[in-house]
Length: 287
Ligand SMILES: NC(=O)c1ccc[n+]([C@@H]2O[C@H](COP(=O)([O-])OP(=O)(O)OC[C@H]3O[C@@H](n4cnc5c(N)ncnc54)[C@H](O)[C@@H]3O)[C@@H](O)[C@H]2O)c1
Image (cartoon, rainbow, N blue to C red; front, side, top):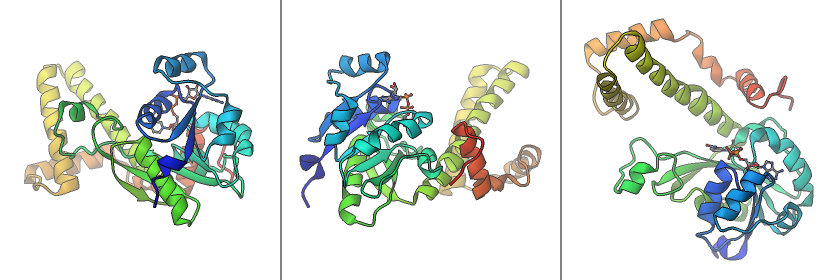
């Protein structure tokens, strides 16, 4: 098959935002014809300072085979409402988070394909070879990462275009994993924001407690926490070593003291809807 970057054009909406700048920095390294759209003065300045030319939304969207909507989730309803009607038949709407798509907030058209993609970020177990890879914790610069994608089309040609785009915007990418939009919402926010990021923030709060309330020297507390965080992840997620018998007892005490018995409810559909409604500032999700 021909490389889609030779033949397809992309519009990035919100090109001066956090993700817009990241995906644009990667798209300039490809052969895609790319148009950059941004409406805030600060964002427009960032696009121009990066050496990229701005295009009007109407021109960019009517010409694009793929429109990457890198605008805030709270703006996706109105922005897709404005721009999706101006897209070419057969073109692809690509959003970078499943929340608004799963909540049914995006303007859709029978002749426009809906796709969502999200970067996995580089794994904690990634074998990093260079200082640039070590520095790139977010991904999209030097450290290889996987990406998750969902596309509402069975057409392998459409999937190939989405995959090529995802590989380009989040480069370097190892694997693209295909799921449904609902599964992507079960992964993100539930698995990785509601649970993993919350536990990361809890670790930071615990460190502050040991240092500020208990008075343990910060260097000691930070060092033992970071080393044990690696051991906790390697033992639990990769089976590297068994936890010691004493550690297992301390882990049980932690679970009983900290975790609610019904915590797995966060994966239920009604709880996912509640979570998304909070994120999207809605009373409720109505599908
Ligand atoms: N920030 C992250 O770490 C991250 C990671 C993965 C996915 N995402 C997803 O990426 C998307 C963008 O998030 P972000 O954090 O980059 O947001 P952001 O607020 O940093 O940037 C959004 C940009 O869109 C611009 N914008 C808003 N409305 C516009 C319009 N009508 N036309 C043109 N430009 C417009 C804003 O001016 C801003 O520059 C969201 O769907 C988010 O969930 C973000």
